[in-house]
Image (cartoon, rainbow, N blue to C red):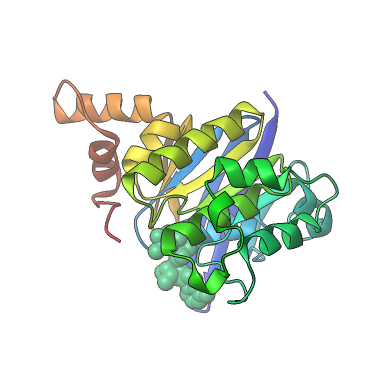
Length: 247
Ligand SMILES: Nc1ncnc2c1ncn2[C@@H]1O[C@H](COP(=O)(O)OP(=O)(O)OP(=O)(O)O)[C@@H](O)[C@H]1O
């Protein structure tokens, strides 16, 4: 197994606030790896350090063997990033946004195929400022994948999507993974993690409290709770004492 992302003893603070105390995990090639945690647990800070958007105060990070800060230009070519609350110019149209982002990459994906897969065809002429929350979300996924990345980091993948769009997005992510893309998925939706993730790291107050497959975590929780079956939500509450789904 090739390790694609390696985070060791990551530490990051904002002034007096310790956002990430001590986080370590490894992601293998072709995995969908989830980062689970409730609000403020340190998920976004962790992935922003992985993306090279923030400089860690301690620890080491390697993505495809690259240092995200030092080798940022090269990593940008191989990493797709879905930004939480991405804001594009209000007047930019969907098709123009994809063409613009496409131009940043050496070996981009086919925008027509991506638009079809994400149901963006019918809104390709719509301006960003006129998109609904769900449409903006689908565009942000398309922009994360337009560079044909080897690794994609998806933060709050399905927030704001209706149940049908969520299921379609999950299928799309499985297709993307089937093409060999490694996916780091930040989520506080336990059903999403259970459905998509091969393994998850549960983060609580800036520390990793468990790394395992959803099946192993639910099995352990069931044994601890003395019940036949437990959900990932049960396992999460048992590990952290909190509910993750509180947005
Ligand atoms: N730019 C910043 N300046 C100061 N504090 C910050 C900043 N960004 C995050 N924090 C703090 O760092 C901690 C971790 O935040 P982070 O956004 O990484 O958590 P999260 O798990 O992604 O939460 P959410 O699910 O709400 O996005 C929180 O206490 C947060 O208030």
